Length: 504
Image (cartoon, rainbow, N blue to C red; front, side):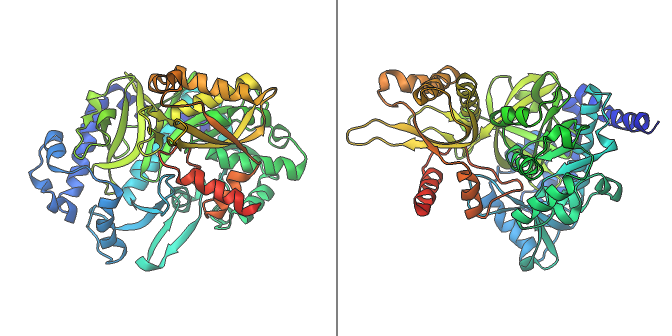
């Protein structure tokens, strides 16, 4: 009876999803009007004359696109000067510390009551509804959910203003009943990564874990530790484990390792797209990893076409103007007080009825030193193909350009950490990687022609745990922190090489 009731509740969460799927553009217009109403009398709204804006066309003309650097002075009014009604008309108590891969310093993203409840939590209900709609036999809610999030701390500069990873903020503000179903808050919010890993292991081995939530790379670290500490397999420890709701990085490079750790036909992996700035997408079907764009979660979307990314005043298209198969940089306006904010993620739509998409990378995470326009999506798929062909399993990787020398052409230098190295000749792995990139990216293929401007990839294998130790060294272990996959400059590759050399 309990199981039937819980299933009924979960599937009931699908009704609002169907509503905005049936009327996507109308839903976005309602969201736009609601956000604008909240912003009219804020300092930012007065600065940009929100009172005179009557429609979305006026909005795109009169309100500038904004980056974090341009947003920061407005945040300082809240954090340092303790002002309110700056970006949003309700108080801001929380700031999510963004662990973006392309910035060395943390970004502070405002979190309001509206963005927390109408945005993140509502999107969480959508996630549950979509999953239960496709799997009405689900029973994960009857057990515990293992959550590996970030840490919480108090920002003393801002007085009574709290900061932390968005995952920590979400857990801190969960209703009591939801907290009982998840990893204990006292463990999940521990700031010390090693201590958190151990206590999560101690908790998990005794619990009926039926679902997991987190970033694939860090959950994998935890699962390996649990297996190592107990000497037991994951299905043996948790026979009712059913689903892993994952996000933050592509799951593709980690999929084989999860399938080895959890060799169960009933195990499911459900993609999500949530960031410090909001919760934007959820996998829409068991048959594809493509995600549904969430349209009633206090987020108004615009999109910058690929040729406009680096322009000083790029134009944007609304949701109604996107086309399938094209690359876009996403722009968001949210109830957190972000107005036409360039989040830095790139997406590609695979359908416009409904609006399905996949995350393809970051506007600052690519290699285009020679006109090859290599994006993370290309790199992930090529690594996966090379692994499957050679029996290898990659833990982490990063790549950057090697520039022209007096006697050499340019190239891409890859640092790769293997869980299982390629069988046979390592040259085969490099050759398949290169051929896959050519097939996936015509610009890369053109630049590789006859080795005229771009030579063969230079692949260097690093020892196991190198990336983990490097992230710890940078104080970015755990939580939502991610290893940068691609960079158009060499600072990450050189930093890792320097770190390796310092240990030798």
